[in-house]
Structures are given as structure tokens and as C-alpha cells.
Length: 371
Image (cartoon, rainbow, N blue to C red; front, side, top):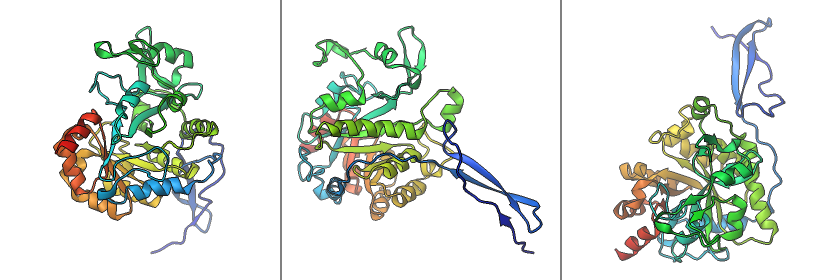
């Protein structure tokens, strides 16, 4: 038969600093006599306060309006400097001109970002952000880098000086970085991107966070989510404090916790959830928001995110997914190797995808306009 069970307080104040986040809280369940008859278990996800930017709903609204229909994607036309033709889909340069050695220009460099956005129809780039040990946000994709002694080092273990000693890379075919007048390129800090990238270029800021499985397997050190997100938001605030208000900035992440924090800590700029289901390695297999598309859609919708950025293969395998996502009031972009194939991109646009993150984005632009 049924038994009435009393539970103790499910949530409580606790000292979370330096501990895992989310943190598991366990409480005993007691019967009328005070005997333990079970256990209540929940995950407490701590989001610390962050001084918000002055609210500017017009920026968010203009970006949302621009993505409302595939026939009228024009970027955030209410924002100064972002001018994408009325009939164009949103084309975003992956790590600038392209990642994975897809171009002769080194990825995630300011020169790559500048080269990708020379056309009026390509006005956005995607870049990857992590932290150094002193909290400096830097632009780099991998979680590890090889130092001058050929040792593999976690980014978060490096000081600014150590990172700068690791970061010079050589462009292929003697290509030269005009910022330094040499064929060696320096991987930038986030602040230096704001300072040196022309104002007309919009930036999709991907905040990197390793999966729990990767943290356990590698033993790597990595900042707690609040510190990571706050450092990125502080960099944007410093940029705004110098009177720079025009640039289009969009936050994106594969980590659902990071996306939730970004939406809670600021409302000025859009937030998108990156998702590949289980088709790529960097997936938190214990989080249904990452492993199941339905979970990703429910999460993005319930947390007030602007949209989802899916691996292109998901849409190509099932074009009806685009309609399902758009019907929930979410914008839809895609990423992945298939976005270098013009016919694949055209199929996605026809299904309702509103823009793509692509390698060799200017080659894609030429191919799309030629057809």
C-alpha cells in the first residue's frame, strides 16, 4: 500500500567555490517515525551574479527579426555596420577563413578573420575562446597546445608568457601577417580581436568547455563555468567601455550549462546551443540535452535561447527537423564539413536552415551566387 514519506529540505546554501558545478546534493527521505526509507538526489547548478550590460533589447530583437524567414535574412539591420544583402543566407567563416588546414591562412588568427569578411555577403566569423591560468580569454580551438619543449600542455595551465611562447605559427606558402609584417602569426587574445578586427565584422563567440568524460580521462585542469563565462563577458564589457557598441556578437557553446549561464548573466546578445547528438566525439553522454535532439530543442526553448546550431548531417539526413525547430520559435544554423559542399548547403537552405558556418566561406559564397 501507499506510505506517506517526509523529505528534508531539497536545496540548501552551500560553499561551492572550488567544487564541482553542477554538484550533486543528496538528502535522506524519512517516514513518520524518522526512519530513513530512501534518498532524494538532485543536481544543484550554481550561477553566480554578474554585473549585466545596460539592456539593449533592440540589438537582440533586430537579430531575431533578421532570422525570421529564409527569404529575408539580412543580419541585424538595426545595428550599425552589419549589412548583409536582403536575399542572402547568413554565411559565417569557421575560425575565420576555415579550420582543419582547409586554407593557407592559419585558423583563429586576426588575419584569418579579416580575410573572411572582405565581402559584403560574409560579415560574420566564428572563433573559439578559452582561458589562460590568469583568466585571460584567448582564441584557440584545442584544449592542449605543444610548448617550446615539445610538451603537450593544457591551455588553462599556461601563463600569458608561456602561451605567447607557444603561439607563433607559420602560414603556408609564405603568407604574411600584415599586423606584424612577418610570416609568423600570433594567436590572439579576445581583447586583441576587438581591438584589431574591423567593426563591420560580426563574431560568433564559441565558449569551449570539455565534457566530464574528457576531464576524467585526461586529468586536465579547466576553469569552473562561472569564471570562464564571466571572463568572456568582462572582455566584451571592456570593449564596450571604449565606446564600441556597433559590433554584432553572438554567444555559442556545445555545453548546455555554459549556454544557460550566458542567458542568465546577460540579455544583450543572442545565445545559441551547438549540437551534434552523438555524431561527434565531444559529447557529454550523460546529458540528454546533448545526446538527443529533442532534449536540445526543449532546452533551448525553455531557457530562452535564440536558436540551435546543428551538425549539418542531421538536417541532410532528416530535413523535417528544420521545420520542427523553427516551429518552436528557434532560429536554425548549421556547421560541419558538409557545409563546404554547395549542393549540401542549398538543400539545407531549402529545408529552412537560415545560415551556415563553413570553411572556405568565400568559395561557398561564390558558388551560391553563381547558381
